Length: 473
Image (cartoon, helix red, strand yellow):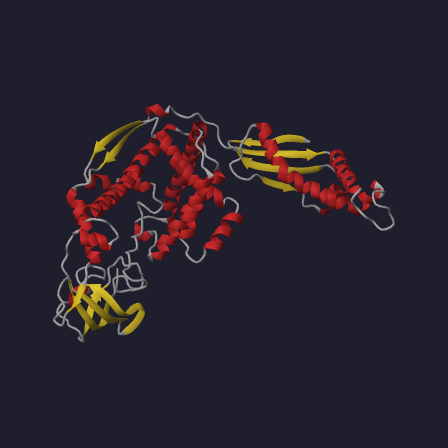
């Protein structure tokens, strides 16, 4: 087999591989000899079929099998011999001319094919000990714990029926029908909807107009949907709602005590506070880690400058671009609404894709040199988390990961990255800094730039209190 490099431009490589017809014929004869004793052909005793006859009958099919084996197996061995790693699966090309193909299968012509790929660039890692980051730490104040405990208690608060008029804090049970220009609209109706007045679950102006109503009352209220409402056909529109009050209930006493904790399956109010504090600390810890990771990535990006494989960048860009356009579509926005143009947005997100690919290669090399491993148990946990996101479709999700090339790798990559960051935190210079909650939660421009739809981001959807309810935010 002869391998000739026909292109070496930047990271791009193209090789011409020639397997002489004699070598192909030799391999074919070996396969025919192996099969001779197993084949039964009418007119010949088992094991006595002449090789020439077998070649006449099965030669082309065996040669086709050899060709397929070569284009499947040779690229990996060729790359290994050259000491190269391909960024993506190499592209294999061979003749499409029927006469040439027939000559190869007949054993009268050399088998030639080309192999095009991009190499993973060679680069030296920077000195990690020179990376310096600040870890922002928040001490959770007791008053914040109490505030969250109160919210838990609110969710467990009981309500007692009342005959009087609804007041702020009361729970009302209502039927409603929303209309635009006098016509009902999709998602604008519900029955037996429960709403605590003052909870701000529904669009501005809705709940306030329920104050003073009592059981059996009917009323038409008028509201205006927010300009950034998630349903584009309702955003900024004035609508009316036909309301029928079916019940009014007053809130019971709000007490944080051991009895409340026991209704939640806990031993005491102190245990409730302990769990709430732990949850708050975990939430802040996640933000702390993300900001810490941002600092690390920024410095790694600054310290490593090398060309990135265009195909990897193209794939990353397409993923980002689909997300951008989906978000714009979901929110009824255009690039002009976000004070940019499609051309400028493409340039911005292309640069982001290049950054992500470069950092992925850097983190990969750091992790490999540090011996970072992702265990089967970790992959199984990740797969289980993916499956939990799609109740009722568990079997389909499992089959997808079993049958889809690269699907398991998509689970491995984020685990490997986080474990590599954990390793980096043991070798870089980390300084702790106490900050306030507001300081921790502040998102600077550098942090926002890594988010696919940031900077020119379409407004996020507001969380609905009830699925498909247009009255709720």
